[in-house]
Each structure stands twice: as C-alpha cells, then as structure tokens.
Image 1 (cartoon, rainbow, N blue to C red):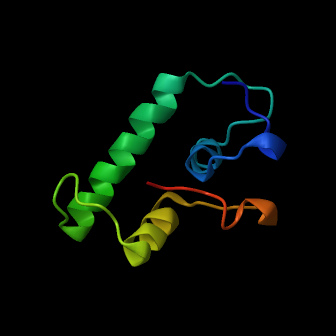
Image 2: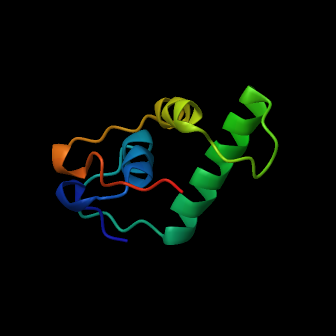
Image 3: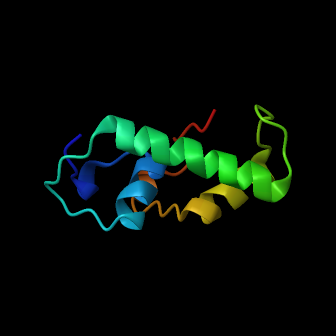
Length: 84
C-alpha cells in the first residue's frame, strides 16, 4: 500500500503510519499493518482484561483509538467511519 496521508481513510492505518513514522510515498506491505493492528488489539484486550472476540462498546472503542494513537485529521471522515 502506497502511503498518501491526504488520502488515508482508515484511522487504524493512519495510526500505524504515525507510529512507525512512515513518510508519504512509502510502500507498506499489507501484512505488516495487519500484524500490527492484530497485536494492538491483543495488547489492549490483555490490558483491559477483555475476552478475545468481545466487541468493544463505544467507550472501549474510544479507549482503543487513544491506545493506538488514532488521529482523524479530516473532519469529513468523522461520523462516516465504521469500526465493526
């Protein structure tokens, strides 16, 4: 996946890009992002003592987003994103 921060619509991917200080134009293998986000979910579930597969309520969703450092910079994305 080529990184173009102006076009990133997935806040989890944006958190990955920010966490790894990846610059625009870099090519990120999908498996690298997938492995990272799965690990972040596992770490968060361990930290919060949640069961594997237990869905996040809106409060936990917001906590998870803070946990991974989600920054939605484009206001047009807010309210249109699905985390299911």
